[in-house]
Image 1 (tube, one colour):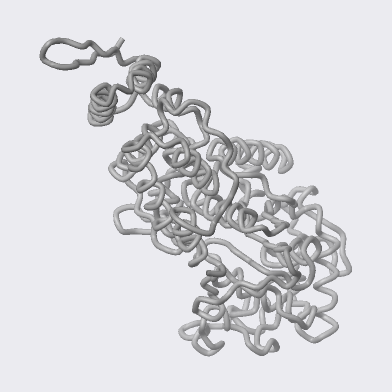
Image 2: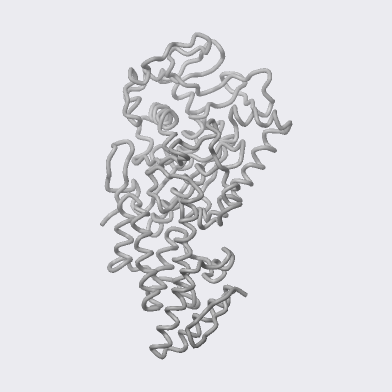
Length: 458
């Protein structure tokens, strides 16, 4: 089975075919760095980390761009509140972003451009749009995009211009010809710091948010590329506006496949700062280890809503422990040489090729773990760890991981004791001794007596 991706633009599954054979170019909208990353950011970063990992595992060369927005109204306001420079704030938040992403096992993208380094490229696109009658200078000094001049606006969100305008009124003060028009270049305001101002043919100012991604994506990946991704909340207006200004300037499709990950929900409401129900990655990592958080995110399909609660994370922690427990006592598991033609590997591949079906792929891992527990097959253990690597899981030393997580739970201990008893009954004393040593390494001492084996923590 070949890879199929759900394309938001067509609203259906499509066979994936990159524009350049063997090479995938992917752009994902990153963070606006005025504060610490929250679990919603983690969801998007993990989702597209899995995407790029699977593309590479499938044999593709991947050029992955995830941008950083380092100039924005919120950034200016926060820097002023903190009485620090914009550069100081954004550098600090980028460092924190990297620390959080690294903890979650998220591989660095090929390119991580900052918007402020691409202002000349943004001005180049705005100039093209003005030449083509798709941009106009307003009375307040801003430059706006003329939405009604772009045929096909609304194709990503699935709404016509008239539907999008329903219930709106023209705001006289903002200088727009139409409420749907959006800003490409913002005229500088007296209260804004000098570091938030760039010289341009339109006077001092700074770019609008939407034009930033168009410039970075097109400059680093080309005017057309394969995959554009981001959170579902970016579908409209951000991605809709990206399409309009990029295709309006270059006359060609911006991206072939549009992918959007689902929301994180708390008590059946979208997690957001405006609702005050959001959790930073660091807050979550104070209670749960990073691989548990990653596993919690991966167990849900990237397009589905992710329901957050401590109960769900506790369940994810227990499930991940069961996978690691299967690898305890297997020694140094060799690197897997990929062979996707049969068995669990073929099942795993079929799941991932069906729009990155991680829930079904994780189910294959549990089937393999059961096989390892039952047979202690090194072949199955190699496969379990190798397939886990495709998802960024199960790469730690099993005993060390379980010990760091306050040991394995009672049920897992009893399962190991039962396996040891079976090994002894089969006169596989080396295997029985391995289990005893592995449990001891985790702080679990076994004591054999006339009524059976008991255990205690040491």
